[in-house]
Length: 250
Ligand code: SF4
Ligand code: SF4
Image 1 (cartoon, rainbow, N blue to C red):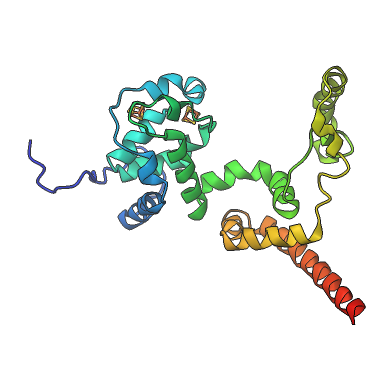
Image 2 (tube, rainbow, N blue to C red):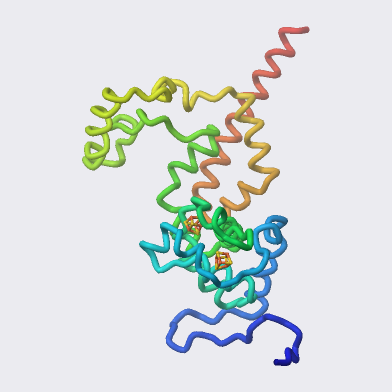
């Protein structure tokens, strides 16, 4: 069989029954190039036998319309439209357990490839990324502004008043269970969100320099603004502290 064009890129075939607006060839190529340009890409994709071992062992494939074999095949065959389609929903079904990576005879990491695709989905501000991450805005707020999220005993009525009466469903059995099985991390109740000012300011520099804040802005402008305000405030506090130290030294 001859390969006249010398490329594995498939022709744009479109979806005859979809109402979604068509995506330009340039955009599809840009998205794929962003995935491919990541340093991890060549490490995590080495070829594919299409054997399906990854899908057979994948927990998400049992419950969702999702197959790591399909994801790897789309990337390996450079099926640009299929890659774009998978980024609209399927890639968010992966549980990132990496069972697939442990089993693939080719040394691929479908879970790792999914992670790259998710990052690119966020970079391009895809609606799927916004939808998936929206319920986690509280987690992101705490994670980015304090550097950690929460300790188990923070899941209670006082800590999460906005959960309404549903919190009792989680709170009640947890209280009983904790009495039966003491959890060492419970000791962090008072301290988990009390992060040293200098550490916070250093974290903010990391979030900025690594592009985390820029990504957040792409998918949730409001949350980005709230976090930016917190960062400005803490940076001012840190500067005040340094100024006071300087005054005391003089
Ligand atoms: S286990 Fe590896 S070689 Fe087999 S289908 Fe999955 S990615 Fe391809
Ligand atoms: S990392 Fe994702 S794709 Fe791989 S086995 Fe786990 S859920 Fe499936």
